[in-house]
Image (cartoon, rainbow, N blue to C red; front, side, top):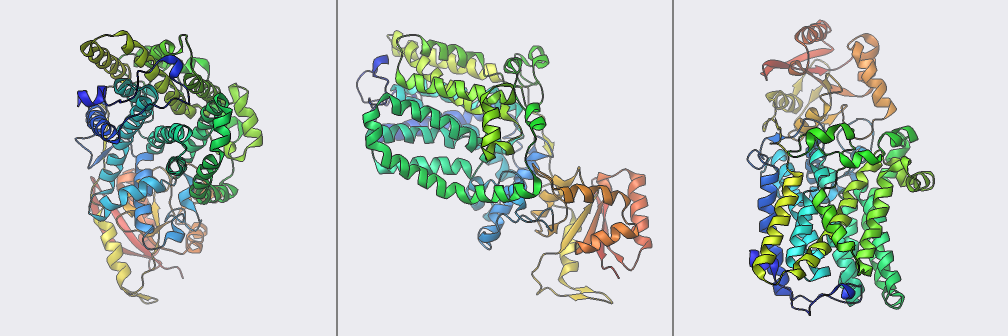
Length: 580
């Protein structure tokens, strides 16, 4: 493995002056395949170690019961809906009666498609979520390694650069944000861009468009920020060779068209959803904008510097980039210079400026004039793209250091020490994980049985009726991600929901249901076509739960008790609702 990592380059010796867009680093397909396989194995091992004990508990544990369960639901929904009703894939089974509710947060279409075969084969939703989440670390490292190897001719430099990007300390502060960790498309897009400029082949133009589109189908947040980054890097490279830029414009246009075709449906749906849920105010964006001291702060559970750096940070603004990557990048920027390094330096600096949000000057202009930037709450998340620029520059720095070493033994030692230092700099204490039930409460089986054929003095429903029933789960708000996760086992329609945005209608409903089941709120629930009410005693204080079920029992026959089952030290009551 190590031999494949440090070798595999068949071109001439690379010098700083040669590191320009018009000098290819030639590697045979066979050596590239060996390199990819070797780095895939290496980064898998590093990821398992860095995120331990996640791999051990991949089937039933996540970092918290909020966003991880939201994203588990989204992945399962995409896999569930695409084969049967792809035109309605954005109409998630949450926030009834609203539409396009999948687009209230990241749609996760691309990872949903990738995870679908595992779900079809019987893997649990939590397992699929964890495998895709861990794969984002691995593939981000492998893609960056391939990119830097192609730029420098050094497989070892690629490994170090991959470690810098894959294990950026920022990632561990966002460990529960699946969508933000999905960055594996970015380095591959840049790799395709460099290949397109060098070789002028249409296959790289298509690949570039597919990678950018894949990022958009995974995370519009990251896609928007990466779009700025790749425009800066690509623009700089094109300025370095205007003659080649004129020769490649058709291929670049093809890339834009492919990316646009993939991105347009998601962009349109997000735009329509924003008409209902609104945009981010300048006050919200200001809170999510980075200040200079935030770049000194890392995750609080960081092994080396979590305690001392904590006072410099704030929620979503612990942006420490890693000192090893910074030092290696400075080595790369020492003269003599090159256009390639200049391009990534420009991308890094623009990313840094955008991460400062409204504390800088560029983001405010984009917020005022570009619609998409008004939907972004946390400009500081641009740090992940800044980390990619830093990783590539760090790779250039490693390549420069390795050229000073005469023997392969010294080169291997330098590479190993650099990777070890990168890992130590980002190392966190063992992750605290929350257990998630791998099977749902039996209440939902009762619901499906009751839905199959309900004998009632006013209505008879038969198994032949395939339409989902509308379900209200109480308490509303707070436990909604858990209800969404449970819905992956029954796929009925929920009044409840949890996402990046909440409509005004839903916020009013939360307030009204504090009085449920008084006549006014009962009429509201009836207006939503609710047929089942599930009361979760495990989510409520005992006295509150007893008062609510007593009130529902007293309102028979409008509320008919279907079942009452024990769950997690309490019980869950299921009622059929048919208002008079």
